[in-house]
Length: 216
Image 1 (cartoon, rainbow, N blue to C red):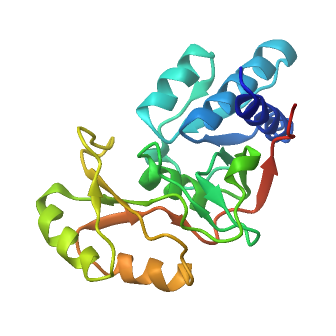
Image 2 (cartoon, rainbow, N blue to C red):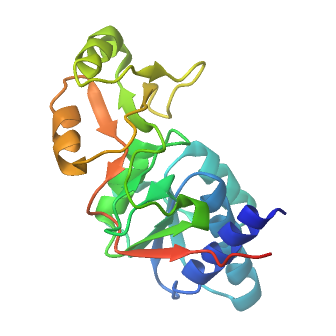
């Protein structure tokens, strides 16, 4: 396990320590979220913690099952008690870019439903201004060319993620904006494009950030 991975594991363990028996827990997607799932599974086995979970991707579902977690179908639910997920980058205002793993739509739904949303990151994900990481958007295939042209009008060349579809069967464009001066305004512009199912700007969903300790 390299230094960054140790930071992720540290942040995940500290976030999972906030979970209490009886909670319904939203589980994110990605390498950091995988640490969360494993840490939660360990608490269930070692401490007898009793929780129910929902997953933001089929990949996380499979890992949750391997860890012996009680997994529910979110489509029958309206809210969760706590959601724990990673981020591709996050600024001092707790605004984030997410979606590097392609699960941004489900991640945003679960985050929005959570009474408390914790983002867990390694120190490399902490930025002063969003935009170093390309911004993902999930797009309905029918609108692929239309959306590409509308995004170009915003001054960026969208990059279609090759050989990838989301769990909803949609495609993902990555948008290399560089530094984003006004994330809320950009979110509104992207939201207004028909065919964009969701964008990876998480502007007010995150309540707390736990960053892993740096290890030498």
